[in-house]
Length: 270
Image (cartoon, rainbow, N blue to C red; front, side, top):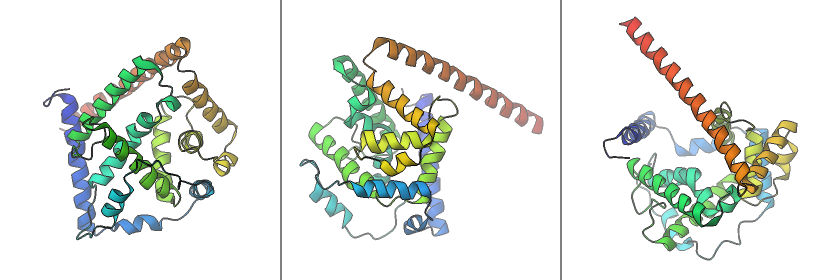
């Protein structure tokens, strides 16, 4: 990846989109509090119930609780959209769980740890290009202890507590993301991924969410568990890599067809 390459150019485009959305929110007078007034639905209610049954009070001692409380209680002079906290939490959603719980996602051994470091470096660069300040970019290995504290702070002081008050707007975003992936990734269902996140990653029982699952959801959840647990097996890795190559080829074909179609429409309009 180079500063003037295609990947950097795409990252800068996304950064401009973030800025445009933030400006639009300011112009329309959107309030962050409005997000919490979304109506409830069965999934959001189930997530709330499962998360409230457990406890997150026994937090790791390394969490920067004092620093977080200082930040949270700081006076706010104006509402900030797409803030550094928003960007850090979004970055965590893509990479934080894998970095904090590598074995849950099938990452073992010294060789895989080197790959994990490369994965972090990639997201450190992406985070920097998207506008995350280095002091908030927990993928930059300047001070490993501080970065670990930042990751734990985001998980235990932001994500898990917020899941106790899950609303329909949040569930809509989750469902849209998973349903989009499921168009190319086989055996992927929204309820299956949700249960995996609650039970296998967050370590809550997830009984209410599990009760809502149908046969296909349960199969997808079991498939995820088996795949990640057996990632130390060469045959499993080889099969999954083969399927991944097929999926990448399908996505490339779909993108090329769509791109050529858009070019044809543009020429026709001219």
